[in-house]
Length: 423
Image 1: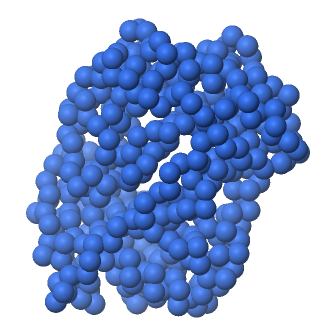
Image 2 (image 1 turned 90 degrees about the vertical axis):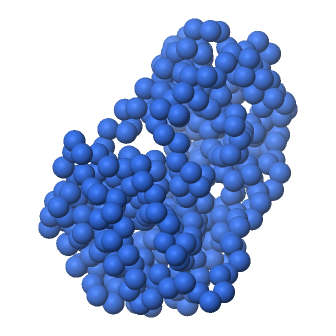
């Protein structure tokens, strides 16, 4: 892994993989829905769409066709704390990928006509999310957990915020947030770090994007999350054959050294078919088809959540089982066999996830942007394997007991019967 910081503050990180013939180029921007005020809720995601609509050098068709013409793929995604644009191509086409993605970052026009046409696309995306309870439940859970805060609001924004967002609001957001000191360029594949740095400097220098300002603006900091709400229930009533539910507790933030123990705990509780919750809810009782657990880690806050989809009449029983299992682990910890199995699952999935240049690019880019450093793969695996049964018991006893947060999507007119279970 190699790293270069340009005078403008923009960082370039690369991972050379000489055994492949591909390269993935990514631009990570330190801006997401957590940086939005209510009046521009959804602006980060809206802008992600709009940057593909045209620049001073290319129209929308030329942007997409340029990468597809060489058999490559290009896309982007928006998170609560960052946005990423990337292209995966054959190694000899890396200069093209750098040029096209850099063009979006520096020179997008964000025309009024494009804002109006793409507004409809984003509204359709919101409608699609609302029509899929298994997707909607996750936004509802964070809204219930964090309330009306940046972390509690959907990355997509709301129908009202998207309908009312003007071209000037989106364009000003673009110019304010897309700054070199808030950008990490990450590249993985059959590449040369020195060549990548040269290509990036040439491509991003257009229109003075990499110029060092006379006075560096104050570093932008994400607003703090409110103290997570516990013992709260969020419900969206839907006539459906299946209920979707999430039971969540306080987790750890992204810089907490216990995050490795948390990943092992989450895997043991709901990481696969051999996990506690899968065995108790599906295998032993046949109450649900899909059962899993996952942690979310943000700056200054985090959550551990447990999902299940079941018949509405079985929802209360499933919630009770989740609470019983988690409280048992809080009191007694996990068995050595469970911990060994969970460590193997976490390590194995990490290794397998790094089998392509896109995943490798994501790992180094996100790590540099979020942590300001990149742990080697061996260091990550060693940190997971060092997790002890005592550490698991300590973190389990610290976060699993007490009041929980519950999100429900299904035919529920009242949540009173759930209140005592999560208290």
